[in-house]
Every structure is written in structure tokens, then in C-alpha cells.
Length: 244
Image 1 (cartoon, rainbow, N blue to C red):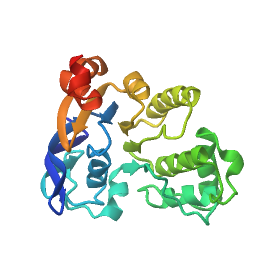
Image 2 (cartoon, rainbow, N blue to C red):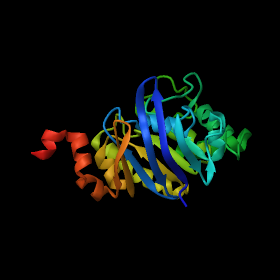
Image 3 (cartoon, rainbow, N blue to C red):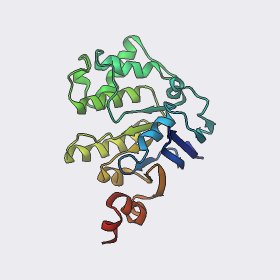
């Protein structure tokens, strides 16, 4: 059974369709890619999954139970955590305190000395334990991305939604990130749904990929199948270029 099941979900803003009858499954333990050109509806779908947006229609199930009646502040307790395309952190708080916020939303919260120790372990895992006591304001963007990731991991999720984690990274860093996401999936027993424009990263680590274009799903399959799909080629390159 799929861990996350989306059936015919639509979301509109006024008269503009952001996602239109999108259906997809994410199986337990997989790294699944969600790709598409800018404006395809990828982040909108993430916001629907995490209940920041209410869908206009469709069904949304996690672990066999509907998410549609789960308020946004309860989604993390259900076992879903995320990072954001534009980093969302408490800027006046320290790196450590930001991670502890993630822990307090978990069904297994930790606090006190033991809680700090566990948060520091997670920060060490993502490679930024050295800045644990520093305020997040003024830290490099790549470091802020890791703080967000550590906060998500601290909530002990089953499903981790990563929204453009490679943003701002160079080629070598992207390669390292791919290996890290795979290792993290295994070490934390996660299922990962990944939105990313860096195709080398997605094709290198995803076992299954869903493709959106103008709010509709136009393709799905293995990385090889998706890369050969004419509809995907047209969506990214344009009809004239794809036909050349």
C-alpha cells in the first residue's frame, strides 16, 4: 500500500488552476521525484499535502487515512515533515533552538539536556554542529538549508518533503547532496518526495518520478522512462526544439 496517495486533487486561486486533477502514489521507503517547469504546481502540491492549502477537490491519504481533516499544525504529528524552497526559520533563534522546535512537534518530543544532545547529534549528522549556538540570521544560505533539514529530521518523520534542496549549490555540492539524501533515507528509515530543478540530482537518486506541467501530471515512471517521454521533452524544451 502506498504511504502517500493523492487522487484527483485540484487547487485553484481565483480563476487560475494551480493543480488540476493530479493523482500519484508514493510507496514506503522510496525516493520519488516531482519535477516540472517553473509554475507547474510542484510547491502548490507540497502545500496541499502539508495542509497549508485546502484542495478544491480530490482525496489525500497518508498511511491509509485521510489528511483532509487534519489541521496544518497536526500534519507533522502524522509523520510528515518538509523543507521550503525559500528557507523558513526563526531568524533570532539559535540553530539549536530551531531544531528543538522541530522536536517539539514530534510524537516523541525531547527536551532538557537529553533533548539538546539529540538535537546536536542531528546537527552533527547534517554537518553543522559547529554553528549550533549561533543565531541563524547571517548564516550562509547553504547552512540555512541544512538547519531546515535538521529541524525536519528532529520531528521523526516517516515522509520527508524536500523542496529544491540543491538551490544555490555548485556541481560538486549537488553530487554530495545526492549521496547524502540516499544515505539519510536509509539511516532514518524515510520515504522522500523530492521537488528539484537539478535534473542530474533527481535522475541519479529517484526510483520513480512524476512530472507536472501547467498543473497537470503529464508523465510518470523510472528516470529512464521519464527522460525518453516525448511529453516531458516538449514540456522542458518546447515543441519546436523537441521535434528538431
